[in-house]
Length: 253
Image (cartoon, rainbow, N blue to C red; front, top):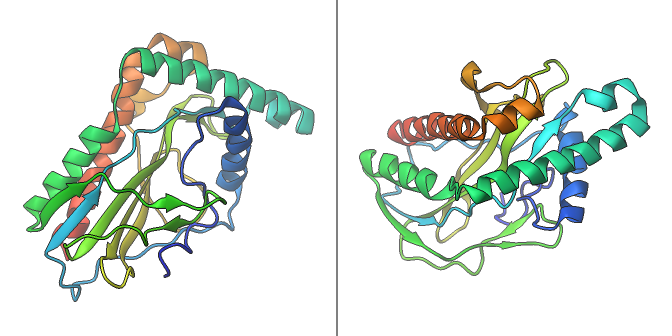
């Protein structure tokens, strides 16, 4: 795969503006409900002689979406869907602000955990603040400006870090989507590329799914907001479960 020609189906990250966030929430929900949208999946093959890895800094999610896929959208058609999307935007802003006030950080602990697991698997891991460029479509990534001396470049990024109430359930459950991509530093070919999800399970093929702890399910948005600190633990538990799978993948190379 060419390094800047993948993941056309899925946005790279949530934008910061409220207006753009609303449009992107609609896009993410539409993709999530689509059974025909697949994601790339490349296992780390044993023949790849990767010993040294440069890990790109993991960006902190700019927003924590809280989305109800049922609600009014399931009962009142298009009008209900628009009303529910507005409510989803309101809930997302409120939850994101609650986490901001608590100075919650997801990226740094996840980055440290992944680096530790790769070192335990025998890799030499360094880090850099260099970042790839997201193209204007927000769905393709260009790594051409990143030059490193190591064998490979590891790019890890969040797409969703929040809570979802799926059509089949009333309760909000963790909704984590994390993408992990290892590319050859010279050829820029994919050596490993997986999309991990925890909690809500998309219908599309290619995801590596982890079940969330049912302790972190909330029957309403008000209950979720009343237990914000617990809900953060739910997201962190998902992140930890995902990094364990990543560590296993690299240990079995």
